[in-house]
Image 1 (cartoon, rainbow, N blue to C red):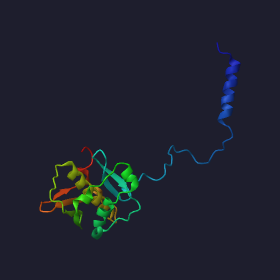
Image 2 (image 1 turned 60 degrees about the horizontal axis):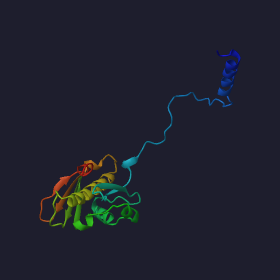
Image 3 (image 1 turned 135 degrees about the vertical axis):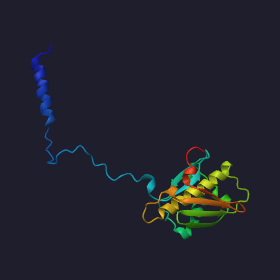
Image 4 (image 1 turned 90 degrees about the horizontal axis):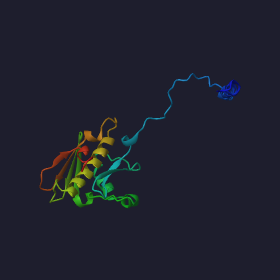
Length: 179
């Protein structure tokens, strides 16, 4: 059986502790917390795509690099050939320097990359990853160059044209996911 006096003392003690001197703020509670700015995540900054040790494309943020305009997209090839020590240490590599990119041209929502690769086989893992590096990196840079910010990476169609072969049009999502 519960004795009334100790239970009453505990109840009075609990009530006293709930008003432990915290003054009211004067702002009625809304139930909504301020979470700060919305997440920016993948929508900000230049991302380059490299090949991981497992043979998959991995995006690497390069916030310090100025996004080239349409006439200077060839610079993306230079960035892809210049991995940082940290990128190399994490097992990333670039296949783009083997492709011998000759020219990059941009149109309205398109990019064309002419490569000197003579024996390009889109069914081989190596050539697929090399193409993915070019497509995703070029598309990301081109999308970021849109001053309205309305262009998504997959809105950009990238054609990789090997020497003496017809080119194929791709979007970045063709190379992401299961490979």
